[in-house]
Image (cartoon, rainbow, N blue to C red):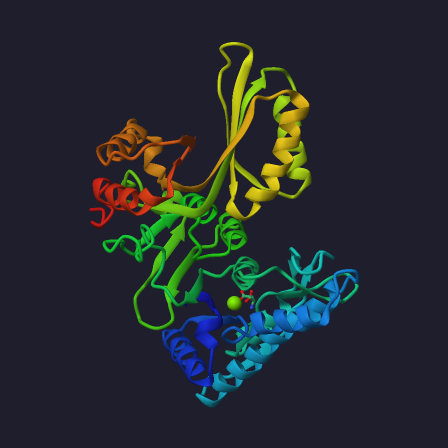
Length: 410
Ligand code: ASP
Ligand code: MG
């Protein structure tokens, strides 16, 4: 007997018909003798609908974050009740639980709370009686018994936290894609659904632009060693298992995936005096304006002046450029230049730890396509380059093919 947490996202519970499909999946596991806890999101785009109602009702001067949580949590309250009804009518005893009812205790930060603890007693008691608990994702309660929510997409995190607390054998995230792909199948036709990937790789891919899973959920699963599976609720394929590196029995492939983000821009300050404190003088006001900076490159100086470049999200470009012009004037830098048509592309794989030459192979592949690399950054298991946005698809296809990602690793 295994204990499973099965989480179904908004598209998987979009209607009563969809919920019947959820019931069929739960039944299969119950018939196999497994214990099941179900976690659900709000139906379809319900959370978006509630958010736009709130926008209509709010004014920026009045802090209504507490009320927003009360409102948003209703989406999941509707789906737990309906899913429990559909499960019960198909002969599977089930019981709905809000976050407060299973005592999902969070910190006090409204709209993006963190889970502190879960009291599993009620769930254990029901599981012992063969009942399927259906738990609302995304919500909890704080110290003062106020409803809190975990931030958009937070149901994945609820599911992983429950799986960790209940010592489940697997946490399954049922969604509208097959699993984690080697790269975006809309860009590279030969992209393949991965059978397994490590937590580390998944975290890199997620932070580099792959959107399958809530990053916090992957972090939590990694911390508590919860095997995490992403799979489709619309077919019977086994999806992708995200697991610890030791559990990838075969030797890891060189790289596992390619991630990219198109929505990038870069800013350069030319002729900056090469003095202590310069980086913080430049980036301090940028971060004070709540603008997130990604890659940062500062060159060696030949004549006691240097060039300083960083990348950021395209939507922050105009605001950052204005701030930078002021900084440039105050420190006597030569010029500010920028580019809003760049993209970042990264290759990710734990295999590159034990193999030299992955970076040079990547650069060779790009050179063969005459793609100019503007910036490079690396981590232990990823190499990222900034290139002209118009070559992104070409680069992704060439790398996918040269690193043999279309072929299952044997
Ligand atoms: N319903 C919430 C949202 O749409 C939580 C979730 O789906 O994970 O963000
Ligand atoms: Mg959702």
